[in-house]
Amino acid sequence: MSFVPPGGEAPPSPAPWPTAVPPPPPGYGPPPPGYGYAPPPLPKAGGERTGPLPLHPMSIGDLFDGAFKLYRANFKVIALVALVIAGPVQVLAALSQRNANGGRGIVDLINDPTLVDQAQRSNGSGAQLLTAMIGILAGFLIGPLVAGAVARAVSLSYLGQQITAREALTAAARRWLPLLAASFLVHLTEGVAFVLCLSVIFLMPLWVVVSPAIVVEGLGPIAGMQRSVALIKRRYWPTMGRAYLSGGLTYVLSGMITAIPTTIAVLIGFRWGFLFVAVGGIATSVLIAPLTPIVATLIYFDLRIRTEGFDLELLAGRSAPLPAG
Figure 1 (spheres, rainbow, N blue to C red):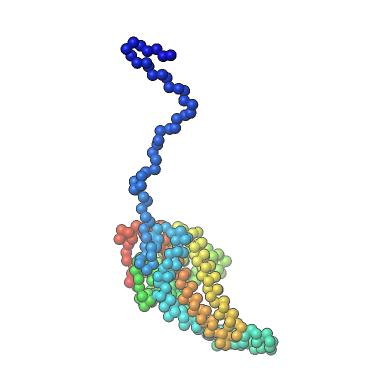
Figure 2: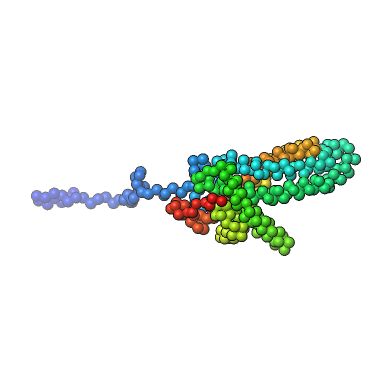
């Protein structure tokens, strides 16, 4: 019973002792929709034909995804370049094998063992060796030209421009002597390293971006090699892994394409089977070999983005355009 003073109201009764801890006051919940700032999207390169390409430091997935996008977008240009330049060399290389095993198929040699001696004598014929040497020399001469033409087409496509196969070949022809000289010097340094019992495996990654540097920046052979070393030495191990992964991929794919034509030639004999070898070589040159310079060009841009802020220069419009030749 509570006490009520005269003319007043009874005081409030005390609150019962809480049986549970009350919940804390509500804090700041998630912002309502549309509130706050979303992270800005990453800048992109490329154009309408390629779709968006990474204009930021590239992961291994970005690198190969961009390479296949550039390959698809420039397939006609790349195929024509490879067909015009590398096609005749592949035919010449296949022709040098026409007298292999005396032109006999493996089945004939098994059924008639006396043909084996004749096949061995024919394998050392002077004409066959001369044809093979001419094919090797031609491959050495035109290899840098193909790499330069592909690098030119791909680099412009990465920057949102497109050129024809004729324009790519013309631009590469203007840079052919620096590309050829750089290729000779690179092979010379690798040969010297091999003779001195140095590890060529660790030397080769330093020259991955020689061709893109010469084509994109208009450099000479020595300057192109120095430029490649300067870019790669800051990211040597990642570049080494990417280069050998790309090389291994092209090697496996090339083997898959040439396996069937070569098997047919061995079975029927190279006298006419060299035609199958030529088809397999041309298919490899057109479909697979261009992947190597495409990946090298993207590695070049990735290194410039990481070490020189090339993406910021490009977005600000301060990047110099590619030289005409």
